[in-house]
Length: 209
Image (cartoon, rainbow, N blue to C red; front, side):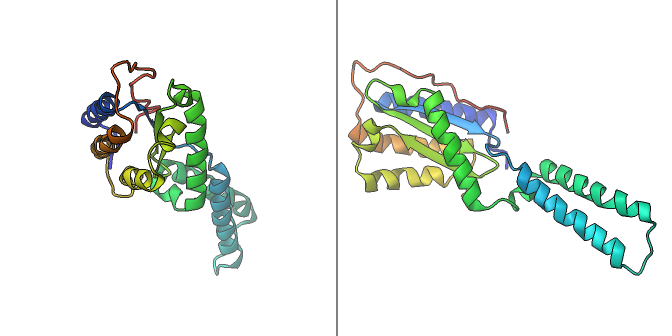
């Protein structure tokens, strides 16, 4: 399923406006097609395929000329790397869930800094980080939110958001759940008349996917 669409982007923009109108949260939404470098995993799979091809040539009932023993295995390995890069769903099968979670968490934490989410006046920055290849969503809140809203209530409020991709949702689904999150944010971090818009509201899409 395509995550981003024009309709989905409009819905996300509206959800950001809703959250920031109803609460003091400064919401930043970032979408990335992939955050980890999985070349190492690709090469491991390619090596296994190349060795399998070599073993077949050595032990099969058919006789292969010696030069094919030097040609076929590397070609098979290179084709495997190309296939994995061309088919993300297949590539993802060879990356552990723990690795995907770790890569997404690291990228989200870095983005929290570089996007200035941690530098708001009342420490009410809120980052929603979406990584499509990893099928992970991270919600990072600054201390003005995380220390104000009870931990159990906050976990319950953000759980539907982090589950969007696992529920096979798209950007419109995320927007709907962010709008629901505004209820919790409004209850604990209600907007004030002197609120100012401190962070850009534009969705950071990176490369569209």
